[in-house]
Length: 331
Image (tube, rainbow, N blue to C red; front, side, top):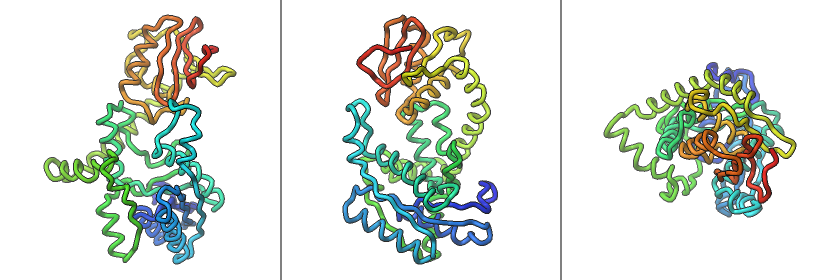
């Protein structure tokens, strides 16, 4: 609590009904008086598993009531969100849609409950899975920073990032807690589930029993380095990037040659540009390198398509990054 600066705060626990979030809610409730916490519980019903989703909601509601914790819930519809996408190019996956809707709903619910921040139950296992997935998909240095303790806006905190799932289960069993199981968490169709079931246990058995701690240390070190270099990247972005009236990100054409802009800085600027257009989650190292090559070599009139329905064009005035449009860019 002290390291995260949570004492005296009003905190809403994002509770799905699974063991991780039930343990987080229970633990914060346990230390509530001592740490002067005002704990509440929020649940988002994704409506993806029919009666099972409704049963999850009822379970979390009953859990909160049994401990006299304020409770609020919201129902969202990821399938409808996917279908509303303007084009297949910009259409999120069902998982991405659920993640976006859940994040927005939790912020609204925290407001209803009078909470300053939302606590989510990401564990050391989730951190390891995230870092390994990004590594396997070709992430750059920023991706190896994994999941931060706090979101960039200071609204979401993750108190269990240094706690393993084994420790979570031990806490649940020691206190006689019940929880709900989501079968999709073990579905081998999902890469994360395959890592969880096979790769990580194997790596811990055959190479390093302290793998979770090692990956957590790597992620923290990388995040701290990114925090240190971030102001330099922001300064460069302020010199080179500007928004136009059409909501397109205009990027200066000069100065991208290797001697003027080192690869490491150019890659960070490319990732920052994509984040500013809301497409950072879809990006791999290959996309970043493609953008940097384009900045260094493209002639006016050329363009490339990028993840998240974005396109980058070189015109007479410089570069423009925007949602893919049939007409020419306006920078």
